[in-house]
Length: 275
Image 1: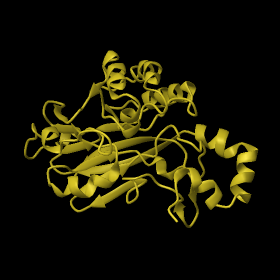
Image 2: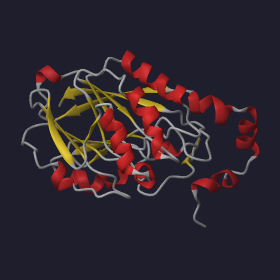
Image 3: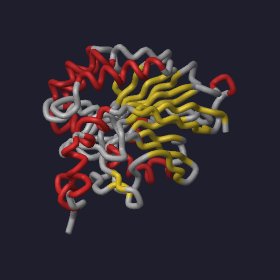
């Protein structure tokens, strides 16, 4: 029987999980328990003066109705304390209504990395209204990489982004149109499971994705109970795929059922090092 996200509570049997939910842990404690995951990533051709370059990845905010603006504000404050060089947003800013972006984007604009904030859209942004989400981001000066790439830090780093792979119109060739040989390259793509194809291209050294929420519920010895489409193979943390790497962020917010267990919301700090 195929298990849906909404069916996992019944699947796990409900004694332990139900008891935790009754105590409020999975609904009120862990979903607010923001964790900074620190990761060092070596990139080929990274210039020596970029050794130690700090990137913060944020993903899957899903503002309202389950995830509060207060959690978003806490996320922004914690990110700024890390003093990042670059902040990258990997989609799903809203959940039930695109208009939530007009509350979220002003908070994201408080982020203060040295080299800017760049973003791509996720499936929920498309399922609500992508034009509205784009408008909200643009009004706050957040740069959307819609099948587009940019050279950063005096052309020492190439950053590309594709539209949502599930419900958008992704075009990896357009995203890499400005690619330069011997420049370390990072790709933003909301759903992680396309990394096998993208990293096989050879031009991309690191893909950053979200989408899975880490499964929201992870059972010791079993891992995630339920994962979304296009997030089945790669769902949490750093993966080596051929000559490239993929990092999957657990996200900030949740979808229903609005619980987290052994899978707290995540801010990812990635420190680049020369290979």
